[in-house]
Length: 334
Image (cartoon, rainbow, N blue to C red; front, side, top):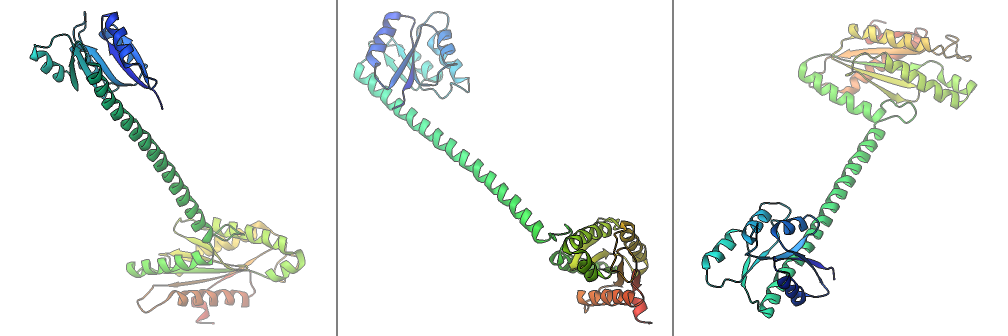
């Protein structure tokens, strides 16, 4: 069993010796002091389960010592039992309780009574220490639980990002494209603003893979994705890998005319990569064909309509010779 510290304060060495012998036990560590100042100093290096204070002491009596202990957050919880040689002056008793005492004993001390009271407060001390240990364990578990919860949230966020990101190119994937297009459609439906979609396809990409291999093809896809993404100037614009060698850009609150500047930058950005394409029938470097479609979402419309329009425009660009963009409005007059 862990030892409990007990503080005995008396200016008479004989009284201290007598109390030490009376309370001696394997589970007790008795600390003595012969003055109030010495007692207060001892509280700095010990956590006492109980303190026995003589009332009559020179310089600083027991009442003053108890009041100072009660005024300190470190020692205010220590139970204080006053020991006095005066049995008759009741005002001393009341003053002792006012000073913070939990009990009052008169000299000569009854050994059985003293030990009984000491044991009560020792048991309370053990319960308090056990409660503090359990509280510390619980606090540690709460901290660990919060850490694990934060880690779980971080991992969930990583998984969420991964589930929305194309593993090869690092841009958004088809799932993210569908979610974003649906969100922007509903937003433009509320605002009455146009929504534009750009579809881009790498020209003769199958021939590129057949000639140079899939490793080179993957590298080409990464570079094209980076170039197309860099051509988008607004944070609200979204580029996604639609599938295979096909990419899509969602431009909220942008009409077809406003998208021309964006699609031009995208085409030029890919050309500027100057990726050699020895199997192309269009150019000796990698090019893209792009289709642009805009719509003002209506209550009876659907995102599929916008996708089909942009897709039709992209195929028109391919029919016109590739390495260019076409507007959906052109498909209606061609």
